[in-house]
Length: 222
Image 1: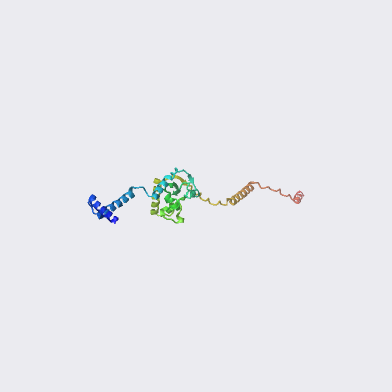
Image 2: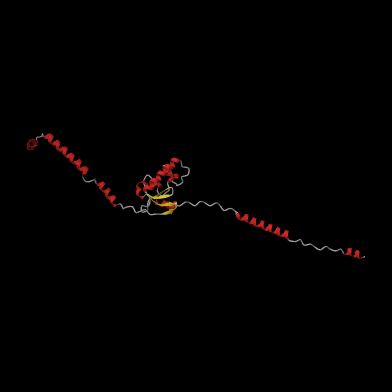
């Protein structure tokens, strides 16, 4: 009974002070509360996960300046594939090595282009191929469109990343030595024989004295 009297008193108070019916009054209050929550969600403090993300970004150390490596071999380049977070992330185009550490999300482990890191991926970039056999710097046999695509990649890397070295050219296998020793021996032998023949031809022939027939002389004396 007391509650009913309180409710009737409240309705009368709403009408007197607001000029609105209780139904309209409570509707307005509900809309106001909903508007408050929406505005506070937009301009209030960020959710906890966003705060953690910002703190993580602040804790990340700045990237060290690129280190110039000079001329290195392809095997040496493989150690800069991002597997060691303490080493820079490198990749090469047309034997030119670039530091791509600032794009670790793309070229680092788990990134969409991670298989290009630590290698000269010229052929793969030109063909937009992810095949293992195309992860090479050999661009022989590529068509004009593929070479143009590779040129675009090279311009992009030149403008965005720092060049830190070049890939050492592999030594071309020397042809097997020809067997000249046998030919030399033959030539020396032949020369010696020719010299011996020449000397023999120039030596005077020793003439043996003719034997005098004793019987012939005796006959002549008689």
